[in-house]
Image (cartoon, rainbow, N blue to C red; front, side, top):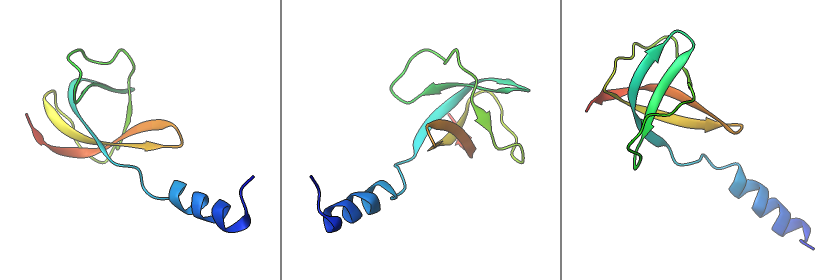
Length: 80
């Protein structure tokens, strides 16, 4: 069993921002983006939510953040 200090340290570590993920836009749909994540060769079958204030094009490199277990495309960082 963890003592109070160990539990607080564990809570602080889990609150730290997760490393960002990068991907390439494979297709753009009104309901989401199909992505090819780094290290993968095929586009995702799943569509990912995206920041509607940015414009996305096929081939754009994007920064993806995991929020509460869901990946969200933050913004484009440039083409491939």
